[in-house]
Amino acid sequence: RKEVEQDPGPFNVPEGATVAFNCTYSNSASQSFFWYRQDCRKEPKLLMSVYSSGNEDGRFTAQLNRASQYISLLIRDSKLSDSATYLCVGLTGRRALTFGSGTRLQVQP
Amino acid sequence: DAGVTQSPTHLIKTRGQQVTLRCSPKSGHDTVSWYQQALGQGPQFIFQYYEEEERQRGNFPDRFSGHQFPNYSSELNVNALLLGDSALYLCASSETGLGLTHEKLFFGSGTQLSVL
Image (cartoon, rainbow over all chains, first blue to last red; front, side, top):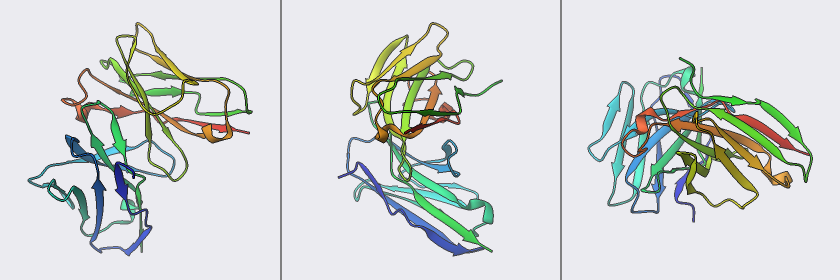
């Protein structure tokens, strides 16, 4: 079983839609979680950190549920420019990031 | 201020050959990590270097080795290349103590390695 699992998608949504991604993790020792965005064959870029109390940044909201060991990302009012792969990432005391395989989002006009 | 730079951007090798990839960290960063990203997968942690020593290693065979120089730049070496080594190799740099300074983790644009 992978440490971080995501639905690969693709999620095809129209502009303006709200879309949510979930991610589950198996290592309860994971300390921190993040969502990264990756455009086609480019480097991953940090989108936002994820906290148990929830974290909102404009149209993006991230949530961590430690009891159920899942992380979510909500994107409201989707834009064409949101089309990308979204990577769920965990950080453990090993100082290494554990990436999920990514969820592909395609926002359509 | 240059970010993380990697070279070369693309590389084609044949099975059995050896390859060296290079990474210069962002100014002020002293820790370099390497990741392998196969097509359709997320990046997988290879190893991390700090103070010229390998500090942490992922689940990769000994064919994968690295080095960090006094100026904090780093090299990734892969021996006896296999077809399955074809991937995007990403370098990431940070300041000491990733857990406390994660927001300062920067990725380079990667080296695309194709093994034929």
